[in-house]
Structure formats: C-alpha cells, structure tokens
Image 1 (cartoon, helix red, strand yellow):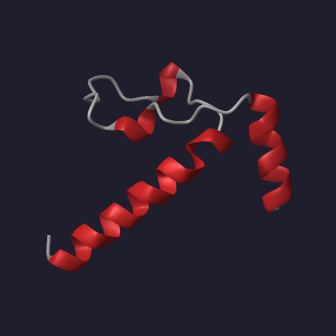
Image 2: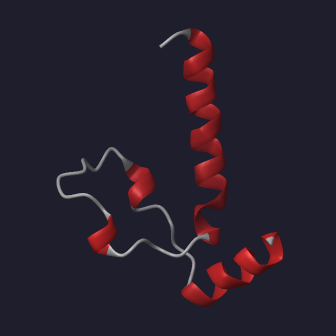
Length: 60
C-alpha cells in the first residue's frame, strides 16, 4: 500500500467509527468464523434494530 492508500483506509475507519452507532449489530452467523478481534468493524455496530431502521428510512 502506498501513502494515499493508508490515508484512505484511515478515512474509512473514521467514517465507520462515526456511524457504528447508527447500524444494528450483525448477527453472529454473519461474522465469518475466525475473524481476529483486531477487525473491530465486525463488532462495532451498536444501534437498536428500531433506530437502525429509522436511520435507513431517513437515508432513502
């Protein structure tokens, strides 16, 4: 990866962290077995199902 790629990954990380509370958690069955804890984005979503649906409707 070059420097531009690293900056893009950092930007994507920031967006995912900023909006993780607007997305309902993934069902455990959707998370591949063996994913390391360092891949935080699989577990970051934390919104209730109702709030996540509300956000989805606003964005449509």
